[in-house]
Image (cartoon, rainbow, N blue to C red):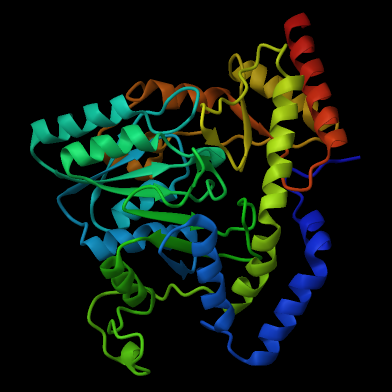
Length: 388
């Protein structure tokens, strides 16, 4: 019997009555864009995270782009990003007209390495071509980035800080929820994310009232900032986007948010069991630092080398078990970033991880039986690799 990597169907069946009811209600209302469910969701997301303001939007990529636009980040500005993550983190920097500066990551947390960031900032300052402006730090695989260290560096150099919480929603540092770290935080509601909708969606979190007003304007074609003016969208005061969250997606997310803590607990239990069952292998299991809690968007292992990784993935496939590679190529070596002067060896930790990491099935409805089955086949694959 095959196993789902992320069993979205199991989640739907568990929440079917609530989701179906919400969708039908939204359909009957006729308020398909920015209906009441959107504002309800934004308030509940604020309540959950502890952020003062939540601005929902069309997807997680626009959620990253919009703060850069609101701050006026553009040509001549340097924005520092980790090299080991998805392309959207650097893509939005280029879309804003600024220059992404790639930094290495910590080999155990997979997140932005503070010392690599510091070195990159000093290098940009010494070269004098770009103005250091902002940092985008990622909560990769569900684990919040090292907020204390990164924020201290941003304060030291006067940089704005964006938390890319696309995978991090539900993570914590000492009880403080992800999506509250930095000057602004973002998340994605792509279906495979810890809190996902049935299409595209995203959200931006901030405590800054002025920034909130700009983001609301940018979300709707740069409309006038007055929320109470029904004709505000016909008075356009800045370049904006068409970046609204559909009412139907908000209607779907509301019951999912209600169930989120239960699903998050299930992912954490599964991750703990995976690590216990795989402890005797030579694979490197994920690290969760003291005081941190991951939302386990992915459960990611580090193999001895590429050959061992491919052997394990192939062995799992035979058993109907999917394994994914996040990510096979670091951002600084992507063709779209070839003009920035990086080469093989520029960021060795990110490059090494891309050659060795792989992720196992993980979701909020995964059972102990499935985890044991997957882990058992991983153990046998590791043994057969060393005996071959």
